[in-house]
Image 1 (cartoon, rainbow, N blue to C red):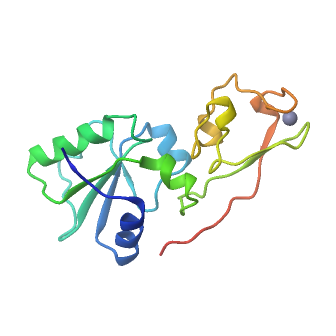
Image 2: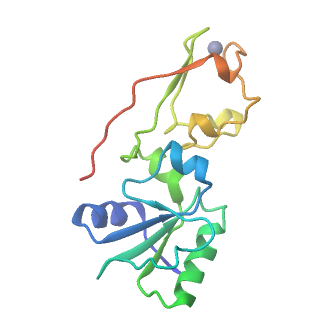
Length: 164
Ligand SMILES: [Zn+2]
């Protein structure tokens, strides 16, 4: 089992420097937002890539139910990287804790009834876990208050939490 790193320790390590973050979610999700400085990795690492000297590698995906990060971590260890850590709680945990993201995550408001969707809260009543980005909601998702489709939502000003 890969060694784990929790959110607080990860945030601290990012502040200090010397962390190479590898995001193994889908590219679209990565482009919407990711942990600051993270590199997107899909089918293995670029052949000529090497982590900076003395850096620890931290791999994350959506959340603990997604074994892609565990697999990537195990693969990196097998390739000979030591100091590989798994942030098993993943990006949703990061967003749910309102940690800084790049670009910053946006909340959305329904233009019909003004219901607000806040990614850090999700919408547990509709099985949308905290930390789910608006962009990740199913296309047939509808406003819980008035039933308006996703297309009736407008992005609100992003928050700009800072980490470093
Ligand atoms: Zn609405």
